[in-house]
Length: 439
Image (cartoon, rainbow, N blue to C red; front, side, top):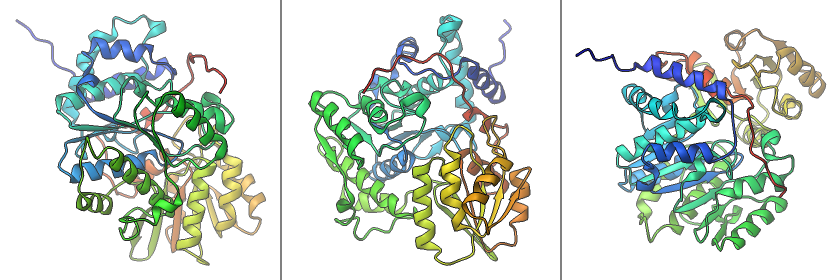
C-alpha cells in the first residue's frame, strides 16, 4: 500500500509561514480548544510563567540555567527568535530538531482542519501547542514559559504555573495592551493565578499598584524585588556573563523565584551560583571583540530598552568614539529612541530592518540629525552596507530591533545559518482582537 511521504522541515516552515494569514488575536478560546484536541499536554507539565515588557528572555534564560544546573530537565519557550525558529523551543538549551518540527506540524494539521477559517488558530497559538506537546514528549521536569505579547489573553496563559513572574512594566505594544502603564500592567498581571506566588521587579508606582491589587484579589502571595536585592548574597559576588546593571536586577528576580519555589523545586546555592555564572542569552548587550574592533549587539526595541542600553554604553565606553548602526520598526517609538541614542554616537549609520514594518533610514536620519547635529549621519540601503561602512570603526553598536540583531548575527557569522529563511516568521499583523476591559 502506498504511503504518502511525511512532511519535510521546509514544508513545515512554509506551513508556519502560511499561518501568518490568520494574524494575531488576543484570546484563549482557540488555544484551549487546540490543546484539548492535542491531548492537553500542559497538564503533564510544571511551569514558571514569565511576563513583562523588557527582560523576559534574560530572566527566562537565568531560570533555565539555574534549574538545569540543579539537574532538572528544563524546557524553554521564548519568542521571537533571532535567526532560527528552533530557538523558540529548547530542552536543556538544545534546540528542537528539524525532524521534530516537521513531525509536530504534520500531526497538528488534522486537528487544525476542525476549525472554521474565521476561528482558525494563529501562528503563535499553534506554536504554543507544538511546544507543549514537545515538552511533554521530552518528559521535562519544568518548563520556563515566556508570554508572547501580553499576559491575560496571551496563548501561553492556558497553563497553571508554579509561579508567575512579571519582570517590569513599560510602554510597548500600546495598540494591543493599552497606552498607560496601568492598562499594560492589567494585561501582564493576567497571568497571576489564585493562591500561587507572583514575583515582580516592577518599580513604576502606577503599574505596581495594579499588580498588587490583582494579587490581593486572587490571594496570590506577592514578592516585589528591588535594587536592594541585587546587593544581597550571592548576587553581591556572582559575576554575570550578561552585560548591564539591569541584568543584575533580572538575576535578583530569578533568584527570588527559585527561593519562593524551594519547597517544590529545591536548588542548592552552588547550583544557583553556577547557573547564573554560566547563563547565555545572545543579542542582549552581546559583546564581540575582534582584533581591531569591538561590536556590541543589543535588541533594544523600545524607549525603556534604549535607556538601559544608553546606561550600559556610558558605563562601559565612557568618552570613546562610538559608531551606531540603527534600524527600528515603524510601529515603535522610533523618534524617542533616536533622540536618546543619537547624542552618544559620532557616526550614525541608518539601515532598514528586514521587515515590512521597517522605518525608512531617511526618516530615522532626520530624527537623529535633530538630536545630534554634529554627528556624521548616513542612510544605508541594507545592514550589509552599514556594517561594511563601519568596518574601520573601533567600537560599533548595532541596535534598534531584535529582527536587526538576528540579521547581524547571521551576517557576522556568529550563528549557524538555517537551511531556510526563518526570520520572517517573526512578522505578524493585526486580526480580530478580544475585547479589553478598562483597568
